[in-house]
Length: 109
Image 1 (tube, rainbow, N blue to C red):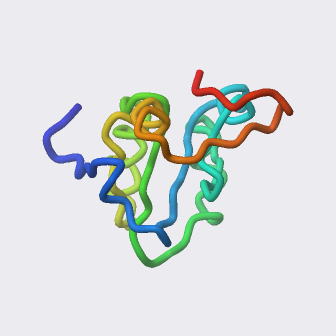
Image 2: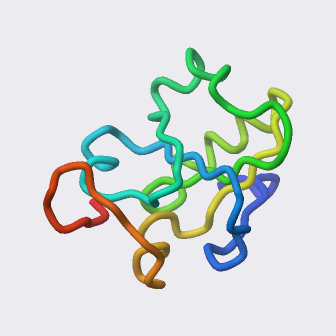
């Protein structure tokens, strides 16, 4: 990951933050942060209008790789984006809430 990508630890994300989950649909369905907005990385360009125009966007994926690329893209195109270090793996490991769309026990895949 480039050094120019701003990042934050999971514990430093403000409670009212815009959290953008860029994982694939099956990953989202298995388990995600309850307040996250879901736009898979591959759909981002055509769905940019769904992102808030002001304020920081905290970008999360499974472990931080995809979200770093999305963060870099967003920052290069006028957003104030920050990568979430460690992604949903760290989010879940720290005991933050995870919900599922499948009806099964939430899990990070």
